[in-house]
Length: 303
Image (cartoon, rainbow, N blue to C red):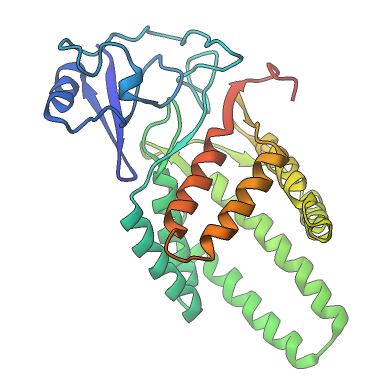
């Protein structure tokens, strides 16, 4: 019998056997707008979109075993990721509660201002936000990195920055800026390598070179001068980033456009200036980026 999962307040719940899942539907725990997933489904879907699941009176529909069927309209179905069994993939999804996001973000901001707690606060926040990401076929996504790994790099950089500031060398200051970008590149490699599902490492790696990462960041900085060009650079950089993730049987493809990033960025900036809507804006942006990130058979898109 198929096992079911559902998303609630940033947590991925499950697996549940069909009988128990039917009880959750009857009790109203799983609502029509709740994101659910089961083996063989294309990706996370609202419960109301699955025939027979809400208001049908019977058991949830059985999903086909093995590889999932292809979806229409150029979509990709699949329950696999990083070595999953199906031949296709699906889009990611993000789900978290507004109140939880708010208090966690405030705590992180305070920790960042205090400087010393930064490595611990960063890892704590990353563990939470990663757990909110829903990947078809890979339940309970988690981040297993340890803050102590960051400690020597973080405080070493601070000491170096202070020393260069005392010296007052413009050349060393520019080199420090490049070194900071390289440290961000190392951070990305470390984060990707420490992703896990159900407590098991996914075995992913980031293969993008440091020089390419530096180049993309410099190009983005230059593109800001054009006022709108940054959005297209950001979209291209996202596609490069996804292509550089290895260790999966599927391609991770970003399908968002520069125009999509531009107008959402403008709306987000306007709404964020009002302060109160920030949590909703952040979730809206994250959901869009997740929905534009798909898993597809390698080579199927010619990317």
